[in-house]
Image (tube, rainbow, N blue to C red; front, top):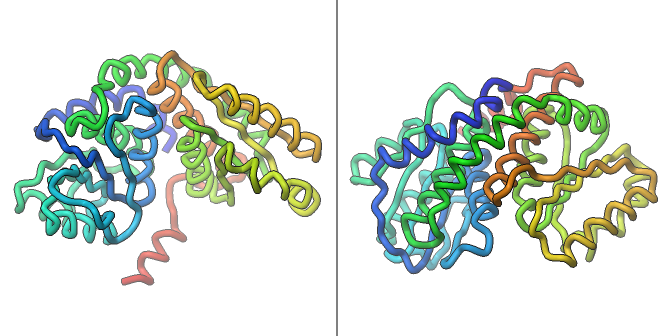
Amino acid sequence: MRDDVLGQPHQIADALWRVEAAKVPQREATGGLMVCGMGGSAVGADLAVAAIGPRAVRPLRTVRGYEPDPWVGPDTLVLCASYSGLTEETLSCFEAAGAAGAPRVAITTGGPLAERAREEGVPVIGVPSGMQPRAAVIYMTVAAIECAAACGAAPSLRAELEAAAGTLTALAGDAGEARAIAEALHERLPVVHGAELTAATARRWKTQINENAKSAAYACELPEANHNEIEGWGWVAAHTSPAAVLLSAPGAHPRVERRIELTAELIERTGVPVVRVAGRGETPVDHVLSLVMLGDLVSIEMAELAGVDATPVETIEGFKRRLD
């Protein structure tokens, strides 16, 4: 797992090449881009939306479930993302989107999704096999960004993606920050806060701590959390052993920046430790991908501290078997 995360800087160029090789049509879609997926295969869409941000000119939507939005049709590009190609929710969305006449693209390592896509002439973006699905986050994110550009929902961010490799390479050589954050979170209940661009990365931190460190963790989004969640911090501090993580990136709304500061102060007054983490680099793509990589490394360090293997997800696999 650690090797896969440290390989993220090099995965960017490979991911771009794989999208090119799939020959995704450059076709205007007034309905924008809809990405259908679950778990680690869906998070790339959330991160792509965060990186694109206000540069989007058409809707960008992530669907986690068995059916695409009811308005999907010929004017919406649908990207069906399933690392294994076996995800039943995504397969259901693939069929429903096709029945609605929507243009489709698949991203997968194979399985029924690839088979059905090729039978129906749908472009397939291949992903390297042998990873845990959550470790393919760069491939899923790049595919979503490139598909957004292909359908005219956003400008091309290819230059930012290529430049982000250098930012991630520098981060890969600095193991100290991830270890220090993991030590601050060890044997505590992490609550990861994000806002605007960092909201999606906060959810990624949460799910990586769940799957890699085998630990409960939660994510919340500002400013919404200031209207409800902050009322509960006194109880949480008295009855559990929590820790708060606040993710930030340049370019946030000034009032959001003020809210981040006040939220940190409020939580610290309850005696709960607060960890502040900022995105690295110069561009929104840098900020998103650097926070993703750092969070992935933190979760692996937490697994080491807890003495657990970060790679297998036996509870998830057992649950899937019970569904069969």
